[in-house]
Amino acid sequence: MLTPETKAKGIFGDPVLTGEDSGDCLILDGFMFDGATYNAYADSGALDAGHSQSAALLDLRGGSGGITVRNCVFANAAYCAVQLSAAYGTFENNVVVNTSGTAVRVQAPGAGPWTIRGNTVLFAADPTGRASTGQSTTGCLLDLSGRGVMRVEANVLAFADSIAVRATVPDQNLLLDGNVLAANLYADLHDGRHVLVDAENRDRVFRDAPFGAQTGTRFELPAVPVDAAYADQAVGRLSALAAAMPKDGLNAAAAALGVSITAPKTEAPVEAAPPEPKKEPSVADLLADLGRARKAFEAKDAAPPATDTPLYCPVYPVEAALRLALDAPPGEPGAHAQPS
Image: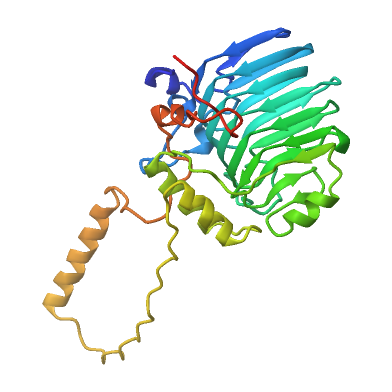
């Protein structure tokens, strides 16, 4: 946690947790990472991405060895929540929520395997003007690279501005089993060059795509206890973005959060009144003009008026992030609560 005095010194550019040397055989279990105290926020509550944390919350290197990260919570990252690089490893039963940037980035420079299993990864936003267009690599939930085998199993991956899984590993090394992919605006799966799976052609592409394996993928989001105030803002923002995904897909996923997306209000055009004939200003008119000028001058120092525009990545409460690990039956996708 950063104190206000430390934040005042400038943008914090180092990971919250990293290591100068290789973390071969490191096991990280049961930690909570909250980027909110590192970030800058506007008076409205929206994230100020340009003046916030410019490094991953967690950045680890395993060299030729392995890394295990499990049972952790990562919330409110302003650049990347998790960045891991090792010959092999495991990322299991973690919650990652409300990332501006890429939520989880895993690189496998060795043969692998890497196992990404039983995680709940929600809301990766793109702060650029290219959000949801496919022209940006940010706003992804899971970014996989390298040459090793990647096993992606029983994860809930939902509400990406861009892509749920961006994988540039060799096609035959990507193994998918039992994941939930929902409300990802540009694509569900992308190989760095082409869309492999998106909402328009899921059935056909899944039969043709050159995965090492693919079984049991679901596209309906189960009920997830996302914080209600945050969900209203985040889903409202997503609904306003242009997206390749049909709106009914976002509507269905929003309903699983208890959010109803309403169409923007449109006002009927008002006919302009005919201009009044010009006349010489009276003393009352001059005084009225002075009054309006005074109000405009005083308004410059006033707080900006509240708007209906949804906020960009407001703080997600840590207590609510903990509740995203569900007390669910074994085998259900997503992060599960651990016995205390």
